[in-house]
Length: 109
Image 1: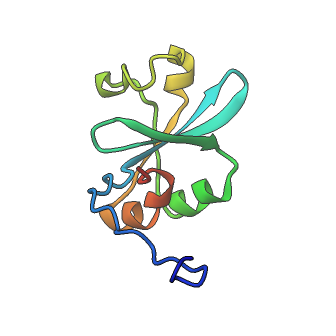
Image 2: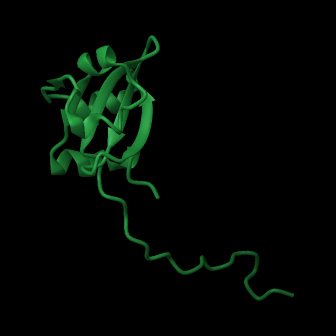
């Protein structure tokens, strides 16, 4: 018979490093629907959600987007999008504080 009375102590916490916070939010049309794609500073995509999600509005509130994602740094991350979609995309750059508070969308892992 167990001596824990049905309630075991939790196992040891895993001490793995956390993923870096989201740095860029790209709001882009994709086959007729608007999505928000979240990227690290290295342009690695970490999440994708409907652009109408409340989290997107919260993370981009008060920020002025850059229009277009046509730079070569976006060639690989947005390779599935047409030139027109990339031209009309809004790119939000999050500051370190905003990125840390919004890291839940991209910092799991």
